[in-house]
Each structure stands twice: as structure tokens, then as C-alpha cells.
Image (cartoon, rainbow, N blue to C red; front, side, top):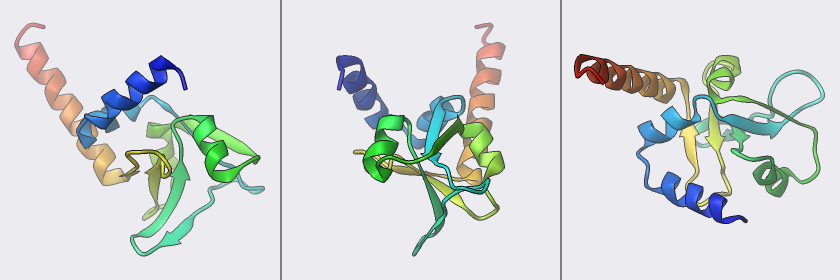
Length: 122
């Protein structure tokens, strides 16, 4: 692991969920690709989830050698079936769930911050 990776992990550890989601909107997420188009969905006590990773190395630790695909978090939220959430970096030090409600809240918060900056003339 590089120093840059360590700094990035430490910075992410201190972010609020909204800040983390705002950063993830355009970030690439990696996931295991099934033979047919779609996702590997796991049933959990919290409901169905898809494991996704912020690096292909994280995916490799989770799934080993596998077929994989990647997309942005924003695109992922549009592609997931209704009711299915994404579990981001489940083996990492700070895993979190990404769902449509959280993504909408992140977009609303980012829009409000942008409007505030515009009214201040920034």
C-alpha cells in the first residue's frame, strides 16, 4: 500500500456519510460480473445487497480471481434493481451501504452547498 493510499483511507475515515457519497458520485466502483448481465446479489438480514469496491484490489481480496466490471457510483445506483443496496468495501476498515435514499440525500446536500457558494459569490 502506498503512502497516497494510506492518506486517502485516513481522510475517508473522517468523512461524514454525505461527504463520502459526494466523493463517490464519480468514483469508479468495481464488482464481480456474473455470466448474464446483472449483479451478484446477496440476501442478508438487512435486505439484498451487492458487494462493490473502490479498487479492483479490494474486489480481488473479496472474490479472488473473477470476471469483473466497473462503473461510477452514480451509474450503479441507476442500474441496481429496486430495493437492492450496494455495500461499499465490505472488507475495508469503514464499509458503508449506498442506496438510492442516501444518494439522493448526497445530491441534495451537494446542490444546497453549491447554491450557498453561489449566493456568497464564490
